[in-house]
Image (cartoon, rainbow, N blue to C red; front, side, top):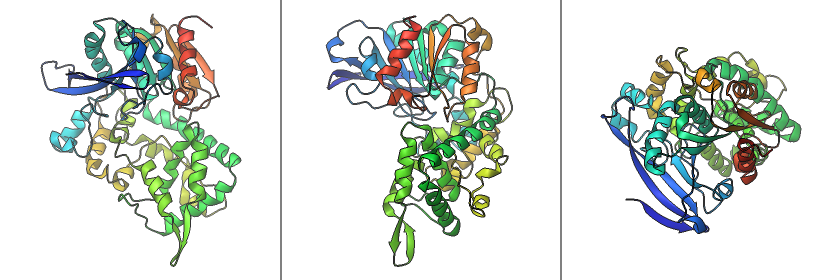
Length: 433
């Protein structure tokens, strides 16, 4: 039974849907999906077109907005919005260290999770669209990985879409996981250099923290093993609009004086464990490289293997000289499944997924070349998470896709730019610019 309630300016309705675990076996096991319907309070009784929002990730549930925050304010002027928790996330049959043992051992868990990629998510959307809209096509807004899903949607079920809006999420149609990380490490290095140019005092601060971690075994309050590689991975913050500033403030108060000498401050450790823990989004770690798997053999811990070809990211070597420590970001590594208590029980499952060889294609270049759905994409000039060159190549491959290339925002432009970003994309699909 659906339950409706109010927040300032909006009416919310909790919606739950039953879909097949494996859409190739519609009579088989089913799982439950959750979506939050949002409509402007003064339009609650109107027959409005639908906008489906797909969150970035993989592994994150949809935003829990309060009232008309961010881009939602613009959307509610003309749409009824469905904020969908993609399968395995949020309240949609969550998959994590607590629930996955219900499937059996690591091999059974990996087999289960192999059905949690963009192709299954799109089939979920099509299954629930008929229930939500009565069969009418809807607009999809895909942020980051949600944009990857939108391109899969355009590839395999374009009849379900009236419009596609993509923010920071145009994937390469054919790049392997290795290709993705070969492009990523130089891009990350540029972001780190820009951070140190803005905050040169952070060079010494980062080196001091790295030296401390190489000399001491540090376990954070939640049981996370805080190694130098884990510290470097905080560079993921640099892909967000305010990330460089947040990283600077984190580094400036890392140490306190104690009777035993300098130690990492409790407040620093508390903040770091929140940034590093995958407890709230374990599918990000488990499936991150699988989103690039397409008939190209196993992903086989691509980020870790490719990193070895960029020795400048080796902290121990860096600290033998006087150069700046390089952060990393937007990559998943085997050591995360040793360090993070939320991931440790899933190490063998992750290994099984890294060896998976049967990944099906996620995009159909031939279908995209004759696309008829209005599509607009925001592409960020030097996006740390999604390679700009890959995005532009895909933009040229999708018939009719219009782009807005901007350096005003980082990867989270739809959050930082809010209504203006959505307004710009809508205008592009309507030939208003």
